[in-house]
Length: 357
Image (cartoon, rainbow, N blue to C red; front, side, top):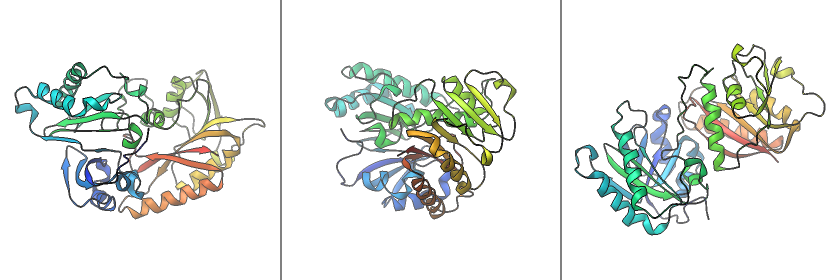
């Protein structure tokens, strides 16, 4: 099995560039090798001709949250078409049935729209597709083998668009790549909690889930949104901050709070961490230096989840140069960068994943 499309011949592709990067989207697509494109939904771009290498391996790939080779495009208005679900299901079976996808997931082109029609349509279409296809190996999103092909489809007022690719090559386990987190719960402490929840989900593309009881050190933990999400997953957290954590975290099992500046924090002798989490504000060069200083306390192949905060995204070159600088600095400290992405709950920032060599 492979995590990318073997053929490098040009073909249509669907690329998702988050709306926050709309100002540089044209340049991103150009550097990916796209000659012409059509915008679909909220932040999707249908590229007339593209290659896996240009889209997935170019320096600007980090600006694209998700991608998919377009092996089936049906421009239409499903809402005005009689029997759309049955026609679409039978067409997908005819085109992809003998390729034995591990799973089938269908999403909507405009996932955040208040109009629930296409969300319901995507769900109903998937239900019918699962009825007509031979039994699949995988039923749920997180059970997918990241290196086995899945049939992904997106549907919207522009039509139905689908193709087969491994989740890792697509850069996401869902159709569209996003895992949406409920932030309206009274237990939600901050938006940052959604970022680490999605990051842990994204990590399944590259490595097994963290074992229960894994020991994290979180740099700049206040008010505790990320801490709360880690504790909910039965992780242990040493949280460092000059400001106190939210009082709702008082007495939580697995939590050790150190009221100190990250710059002066020194772990006790013999301490070992399974993971370092940094969502620090301020210059990213300073943030990565704090991580580097604590790397000797990280076990072999231990994880680092690092938010690379970009001051202002006015061009592609600035963030790429900053990214290269951070990657080089971390490599000197014995950290290997193995993934990077823009999460649903990131703003002008990227989430980088390292492991200790």
